[in-house]
Image 1 (cartoon, rainbow, N blue to C red):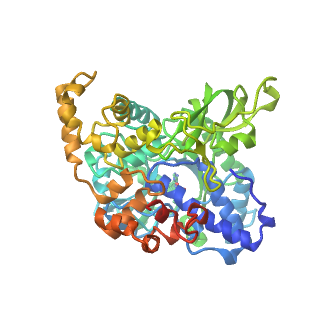
Image 2 (cartoon, helix red, strand yellow):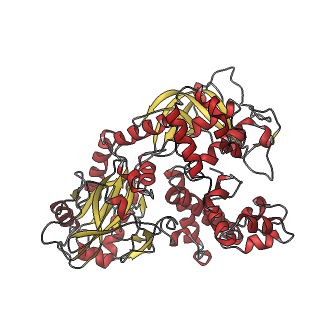
Length: 594
Ligand code: IVH
């Protein structure tokens, strides 16, 4: 992360600018995490952004933006599923990162309720499951609707998919209130996650980064037979609308949920002081790596529901609960090499090749070094011992070199100024941190990555044509551009000579390609892999223009920037001056489309 001005030294103008940037960055990472199940940064880095935003807002409350991340929960519901408005909003939790934060949380509650230290206050501690929140609505004892959290107010209707999960009862036991909304976490076990990834690999499909993404990806399938083939599980820990409340405390609620047939977490435990809660936290932390599911902290909740009610909510989170997050897991190993990978848009990305090391139960041999500036700033050198961090999710990162172990003859890493694949010059435009290969379509790496993107799940999604196949077809000269995929039919003889391609699988491939000859404009635009045109922007454009011809006409006209910037989600929202040198007041997306 970049060096930051201490909050107390920020001028009002700097604060305003930074809040605008943070709103945009947080919205972006939120969309990657919740909307696309594909996070780019670790939870720890994301939390740091949110904390910085909160701290600036605390110092400059008059600068709090309408679109401030502190006013929003999660990400907007995806467009694929019907929307469900939650009758009781699904909120998120505030975070505690240290023992002091936990003491402060308890002190705050006591102050608010006016309960002195002489009186006891019952709390519950339970694991924070790293999955995705769900709300299950039962009417007259029967499950009638299941919705994801979405933005907290509105989620997605995933009823058909939830019905494939055997751990979730379809009917409640005798005596349940007429309306029961049971809430909890959908997750995938670590073992099932490993098996799913092995299957993905065998089928030439992309890996899921972690069990949470795998669970999210599996639940958000339009085809529920796919969800059915992915073992998902559930823990109940909360509720929404209830026509009658058959319990008076969280501990009683957990017992009631279990009696109704819901799985509840066995580690939930009561406590009355910070010491008690921290003891449960440490116990759960020691069990963490042995558990068959990912957890990312411990949630503390006031037990008495009447007190919860009095405590109420602040902004998007309850005052009566907090999530005490686990610190990221660290380890030291040797940096064997720095690999420079070339992405779809030509971006050079440094990847640390490491002597394999166990970081919190997972073997790690690759880690991210972020970018050229980070390597220079940290002075990371090949041969160094480096400290790694894995934050229970996404790619592990290199934190720092251990200077005391540095070899005498080591040299600073010279970042390439030319593309390691095609040899074209690699440049940094407009003071971007990313250096990009200027080879465009003469660069094999860019071509292959574009092809992989073109056939990927959220783009053309051609069944049986995964990234490995497309890379092999490209390297053998069979597919040079996306259009060639639709001409594979002419290459039957070549295909038949390839290992693993029998008559049946070739027929299947052809059928799958035919099926995608017509696809939605949004998917098509996304598949082109234009910089700044992600899934959301592609969708906005498709909505605004409806046909490719209309879009081309608008994008090539004299007044294109103005026209595009007028569209919801394209212009103003993403207007970042340095990304659009020709028109600093216009959006990056509008520029990219030109
Ligand atoms: S209670 C009103 N308990 O964490 C508060 N949430 O960061 C309702 N989560 O949206 C949440 N384990 O999806 C609660 N034991 C637990 C949890 C838990 C995981 C998730 C949940 C929530 C998110 C907040």
